[in-house]
Length: 205
Image 1 (cartoon, one colour):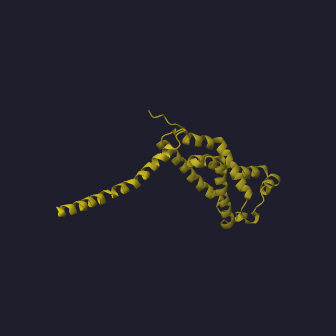
Image 2: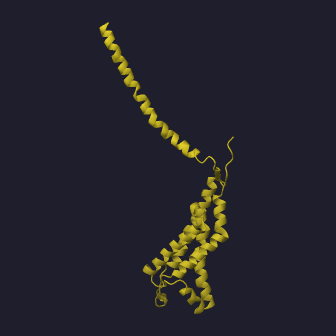
Image 3: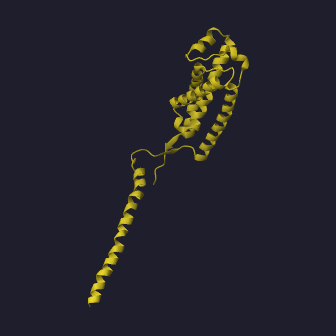
């Protein structure tokens, strides 16, 4: 009787030791599972939206825009980064906005003025048209203009530092950015909205 009495507490103690860790193991897993669902269900009052166009169509549009952007980058590099040794005596850097524009208008011929001003404006138009399609988060006009100004500023710096017969001109950056604004107003804004437009999702039954 004494031996059986001594064995019973040992068995009970062993069983309790095995059963105690079970709740501790399962307890930490519950919050980890519940957290994602709580985050998704938090904006319950906000309207649920989805893209109007299916994903393959949007990817195709972005791929076409990327191809046009690559082609434009090649043309831009050939136009702006091609050396021009004959223009070395005529080139000079311009850090004052408006100085080159006044020189084009007052001293240059009408054809040369249109070529210089119109050419720089046209170089910025593809940014305003293609960026809203390529970058959905940069569809706003301010972001398009900021991106265009940054890219063209780097191009002008490369011209002034590395290319013979080219010089940095802040007016070129201003004209390029104006061209991006023109492209965004005429086509880029509509293309960006059409490709990345969101509509209310159908209500789940």
